Structures are given as C-alpha cells and as structure tokens.
Length: 68
Image 1 (cartoon, rainbow, N blue to C red):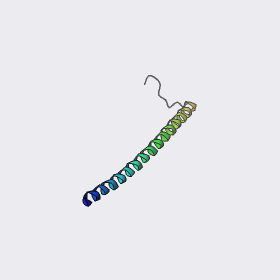
Image 2: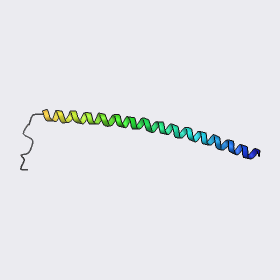
Image 3: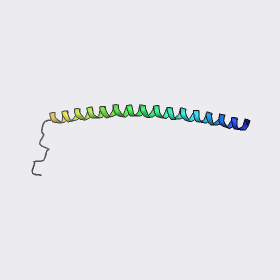
Image 4: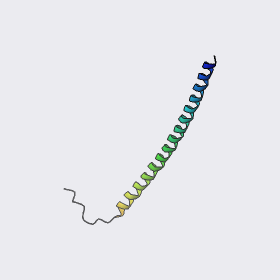
C-alpha cells in the first residue's frame, strides 16, 4: 500500500508542476498577443502617417505618364 501511496504522491507532484508550466505558458502567450496588438496598432498608425506624408510631397516629374 505504501508503494501505491508514493506513486500517487509523485503523480500529484508531477501534475502540479505541469499545471504551473501550463499557467506560465498561458500568461506568456497572453503577453505576446498584447504586444502583437500594440505593434499592429503602431504599424497601422505609421502607415497612415507615411501615406499622409506621401500625399504632401510635390510632384517632381519622376512619375511616368498614365499611358505607360
């Protein structure tokens, strides 16, 4: 009976350690998604600023005519 109790204790410890690892990985993924969302928003804002700046550039004649 002692062997069974020891095996159950070891399984419970292993299960607890695995649950802790799963929780840590879940938290890490949540932080990564938050960072991805922040970077996506920043990229969109930067793209908008670039497009605005491009619209303000004077036409320097380097643009080919429409028939090309």
